[in-house]
Length: 108
Image 1 (tube, rainbow, N blue to C red):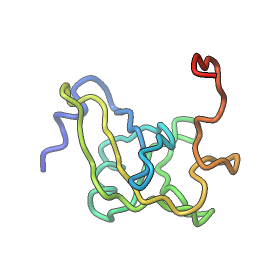
Image 2: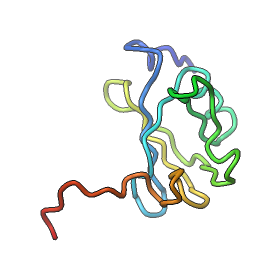
Image 3: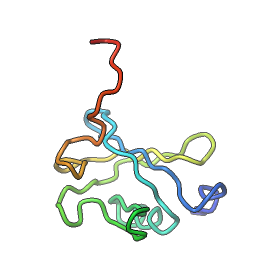
Image 4: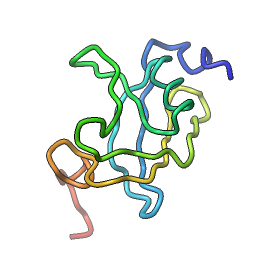
């Protein structure tokens, strides 16, 4: 598979991670060519850490791994949607999802 088309706009591509069983958005991270290739090869999520400037395998230290069930690109090939089976919390804070801070809720 030619991965170059996903990196025409830059060295990193945003990857939205969604839980298969609930549809909940768990996190947003970035992939480079190597992390995308490792994700496709291993079936588990790999990302590029912008702060540490290194590859990281989600859950390698915590055990909260993400097994990839489906990987999709958007219509412009510049964002990925990674559907996963999540083990434990996805967020480093211990929250199930990284999206737990409500800024606006018009349904409340």
